[in-house]
Image (cartoon, rainbow, N blue to C red; front, side, top):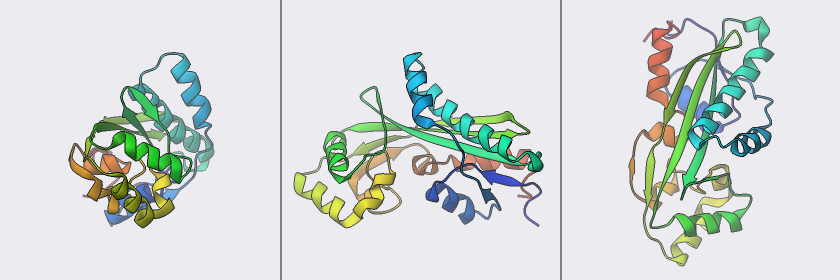
Length: 204
């Protein structure tokens, strides 16, 4: 046995599922019913900073699913969110390939930050939080290189706020990264695993 507790991932993200599956965590997936756009709009109107906003979204997701799963009251419910911060602004996922192209043009030759918030709820209460801010340095690129990347990577990159996937061809766009690789993908894995061990949810 490698696990002692029910774990639920409150996310529709394929990469977050893959991260947990790769390290042998057993879990169920329940998509949260959360209006992220409304949360973002209201938080920004109140002047919340982007770190607080990312954590609010992660908490809203795991609390929503924790409430849905009243029968699994002891389950640990993981929520996560990621916000791209560039030039002091938050960016959402590009709506189409033209917006992705514009995003890469803006980012090339510069650095940006991916704010990754993870929260865990149990019995309707937040019991753990973690925030990471990895920094990515995109190399300078020509229009030809950007177009070649978009053609090769395809529409899958629209699932990324930066219009890239560093676990795939997107790695070729960067000079370096500073911070947790898994946080860049969307889930700060090592702090989460340490928490699950402390809770006795994982055997090792």
